[in-house]
Each structure stands twice: as C-alpha cells, then as structure tokens.
Image (cartoon, rainbow, N blue to C red; front, side):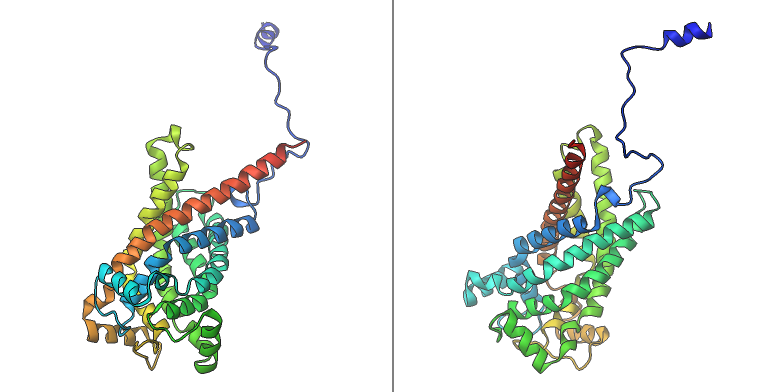
Length: 327
C-alpha cells in the first residue's frame, strides 16, 4: 500500500526546481533590501538634489520670513513675502543660493539615507514594523548628514536674503572664513541637530507607518501603485514633521543669518538667547514664522524625495536581478 501510495503521488509533470550553483540557503543576504551601501548613497544623493532643487523657491520665501530684521520683509504672510522678493530682485531672487544647495544636498542625502538603511537593518531586529527602530535610525542619520550639510546650508541662507552682500558661494565662503572664522559655518549645528532629530524621528516613523497602511488598503495592487504610496506617505510625514519643528527652524535661521542684511547678531550661540530675542521682538508667534511655507516645502519635497529614492532603489534591485539572471 505504501508503495502504491508513493507511486500515486509521483506526478511526472512536477519537476524539482533547479538551484543556481552558488545557492546556499543557510547564508542570509548581508545587504538590506538586497542593495549595497554605495547604492543607497547614490539613490539618496539623487533624491536629495531633485527634492531641494524643485522646492528651492519655497525655501527662499521661508528664509525671508524667518530672518528677523531682514529688509524689506518683516512679519508678513507668504504672499507678501513672495511679492517683496519678486519686486526687489525679480524671479532670479527666488534662486539665490541654489549653487550652495546643489553642493550640499547631494553628499548630505547620500549620508542621510545610507546611514538610515544601515541603522534600520541593525536596530529593527528583522521586524519591519518596528517604529522605534525607524525613529532612532532617522536620528542617527540626521546627526551624520547635518555635519555635512550645515556649512552649505548657512551659505545658502545668507545668499537667499534680499540685498545680500555676497556675490556667490565662493565669495561667501571666503568672507565668512576670514571675517568670522570656521566656527561660523557650524554656529547652528547644535540647533539643527536638535531640530532635525525630532523632525526625522517623526518623519521616518510616520513614513514607514503610512506606507504600510496605504499598502494594506489594496495589497493586490500595491506593486502597481508604489509611486503613489511613496509620494502620499512621504507628503504626510514631511508635513507633520515640519509643523512640529518650526520653532527650532526659526532659531536655526537666526543663527545662520545673524549680522547679514540687518539681522540681529547674537553674542552667544545659545538657543535660549535666540528664543528670548525672537519672543521679545515678535512675541511667541515669532517662533512659528514661516510655518506655512515650511509645510508647503516639506510635504511635496518629502513626496518627491521618497518617490525618487524608492525609484532609485528599485532601479538598482532590478539591475541586480537582471545581472543575476544573465548566463
């Protein structure tokens, strides 16, 4: 009976699936998502450049609104700030400092996303739903990337101000270095980290959760709608994180633009001193200056960034799969 039963279930139409000669089931893949560190860096660098270049005019409006004493803009809304820039400098005024952004965004985002992916793999313990791991990995990523981006961000913001005395990126770097010293490039680093740590924690945790939720709504078509999912999750994460951290962004702008175009200069880099100066001059509402353009920047910027980054990862994954199937 046993022999008959065995013969009965031996269907000649079924064939064993051949495994490649280098197949070792006991060995796990070392790179997260099947990608290498340099591939995360390239995808992140491209995503950062595309994001910041696309949204740069909005960032310029935000900087003008946040810089106390910056002429000719005082406490005004987005429309008035935009009109003032266009009236005094024309459309080109919206793109002042974009060269500094180009120099800083690529390397910074390469560090940002690659560190995030490595930390996410390490801290998640194999659990893709570990929001705490996503948040902490984001904090680690921003501490590293801010060290790369802060100097060029300072140059960018000084060039963005109306009637800036600097002729360009190189002129700004030379003059700041000779007149204020190397520490001026990192005057806002502590504030930037204190702002971006909660920003990134909220951002990454919200993005990963929103992405899972959106994919769960229609799992059958999740692959076909990946671009929409990444963009929507990124926009939600960027908007929420931007709103929460606006006060520290105002402080960061003050520290980076001090002494330029009539902006107040601070005797120390103390966050408390800057907050007190803002509240004294503009009340507590001053700490929320530029929150609308900040959200208008980060919502679409995050959507663009995450979509581009995930597309870059998919490209490398497909490239790797295709190269693996070539005989």
